[in-house]
Image (cartoon, rainbow, N blue to C red):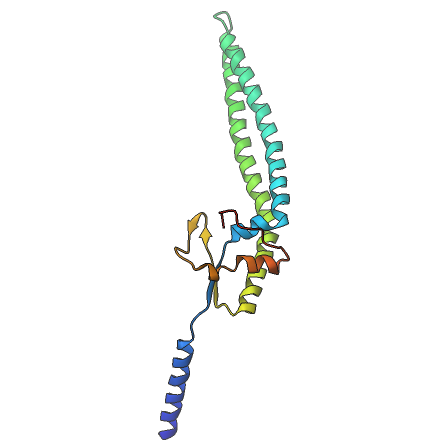
Length: 179
């Protein structure tokens, strides 16, 4: 009985000591980290090139659509009904094609962005994990998710963004008011 009581007191004491240790929490600005990485310029350039290419295809269809609409508007009273209906059908088909092209272009841009960003996210995630372990952080939070602040207040001393950049071998650039 005395042994069980001593064991219970010892376990309670150990639990109490562990609970008294403060968690070390930091946060990282992933958008800031990404903007400092050389990969960001390459990814932005590739996405811009793809967007330009996709826009050219859509613009060609829009020009064709506008040409058909102009032709249709030039029809006089002497144009047979079959020609008028055929032209209307072509205009609707071109319009449908433009909408599909726009949807496909948006999906292609999202696919490409995901493909290009995935290795960067993994690299940054690994660096954040390493910084957390090396500096004794229990938690690292992101200061924003989808443009919404996750941290409503954070002491600048807890921001590990520059440590993560250094871990990635990147010298942080001076703050420009954004950071």
